[in-house]
Image (cartoon, rainbow, N blue to C red):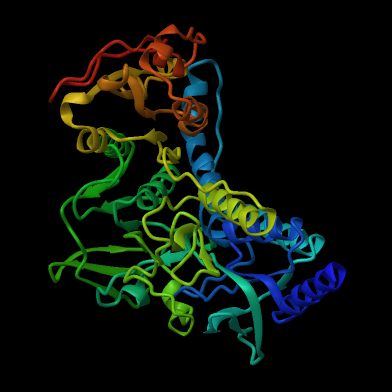
Length: 497
């Protein structure tokens, strides 16, 4: 009898599995979606991924891999590195080198794009190796378990899945200023633009705005950033303002407390920009970087019973579930979580291990390190000073800080006044437990990656004090930091080697 019942359960399980085309269907072939799909396949699930890039208003499209690979982290970092070379040559001049070189925007874009295409191909190969079905089609919901796939060439098919993961990310927001989509580009376009940008206006004060403005100015283009209010909202404002000052000193113009009211395309292809309906200036390129909107609103989620917010994002619980239990979401499309590639990757893998591997660990979204690749780099993990005072209360927060200068800057006459900066934010009620670490200077991302592990392990200010620094390095200043930041106090005097 037992064997008969056991056989019946096995047959029932097989019948249930056959009721759907796939165990898991992933909507979106970005970093998070691909990581989740491959993890699920490794755990024995039958998996498919749909990814389809609708052209930007300027007509730009790209291959499999999502924002980070195609129009985000990868090309941004490469162009940032390229743009720093001019100042690196200046540093080298101070220690004996005589260098003369020129930069070609066209050559850079070609080489960066060729590298991206190799990553696109690698992503397809990974899916094939793991037997994950790839659909180059746009997926929308027909019902909670069924998706319609449109390949954009007249072929529409339907597939069903037991579980569905929404990992479609977001796209740049343009706003509703007259002429904006006809006249302007975004981060979806700049990394694939074969023609050099020339005189450029960047609208916005986000990290995307400042990073793009920074690398374009580094190549010698005339760049203006139009800022409505503050720089880098959500980041530590001391450091945000230092970044602005550094960029101004290094050739970036800022138009403060200003927003465009209209754009007009001129006969020669240039863009005339208006502010308060008065002509502000004429630019070769206008790049909009005022934020991003999630793509959830484009999936016909109504058919699945999943609500979404005005910003195109969905709410999920700590298990990454939407209100429909078998529909999950990760990455930039979920509400209130860091929009960072490694976050999406980790959340996707953990979600699949719970679904198909019997694991229980959930994603921890706290204390995720990040870096801003402006001309002077910024790394941060934990609370900003403003956030610490709001969450802990002013009386519990103490801030240690210092200025520091990389050794090689001292021999560059053009950099003698440039300064890096570091900040530790501690909780005095918890034996000066470090709640936030910030660094402004070369290779900040590399430094903060290591310190983020220490912060997650509960590091205290005493641990920093007891640590012996590596000399001569820029980051050794963390181990000798004694100056406390007072309310309205000036920056510390020069430190470093």
